[in-house]
Image (cartoon, helix red, strand yellow):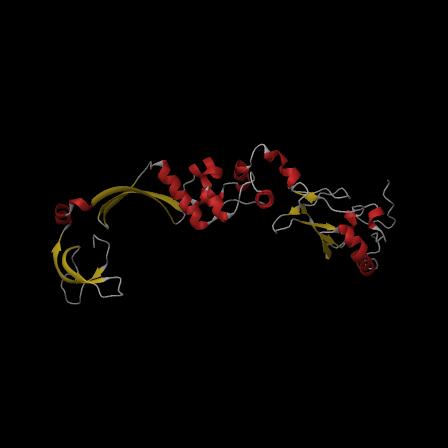
Length: 299
């Protein structure tokens, strides 16, 4: 009905073929969402327009429907749709709101997230949790609530799901970098870390504590691992065998060399004889490949 309530006709009413009804009496039992027509007569649209002009409305509706923006000019009598037709040039603000609605209903995974984009988001989250302002929050709710501030023109030109899927989330996230503090991003939360062997493994910021997975021979010479965020947070080292199997997890490398290393050395030096397994790793040259005769690090 024009008021928005659904009603049904009783069997044998003889009114089932009518397109329009003027309903005089309808009842609804407690607990039911729809009502039952008790008294009605056949009507038509012209009669409805004439007797209820105060219910007539024409509105432009721009919505996200099944993965794209649908813009329509809709004429209604109350809750009843009288006509609708597409709009070629809808209000940009309505389009933006519809795209935002589509993004919110689908989620940020709809955007294009490559490994660098994911890493940047995790690094920003780490700095926000560790240092606070000016580093921005990048959780789903915050990013969705402020989509226009970081998706910018990309969002303004989107009209369908495929447009959102093409947005490079990493490039967009960089609009949130706080200047001039952003110049220290790679210092405070580097994407990769140089280890004593000279290699540059990627840090994993997906957990609460950043993780560096690296072969144990590559960190010979380190008495302690670097700390992040101006020295506030130690790195959690995942030390690997030459076959890249985990042999130890530690945030205190100096303690590991003293207490954990002797057992690791005893377990693995026979299995990997081409790699060095020194008694004191802090005095031995690190290596990436094999090193039967590792030398002492020059002082």
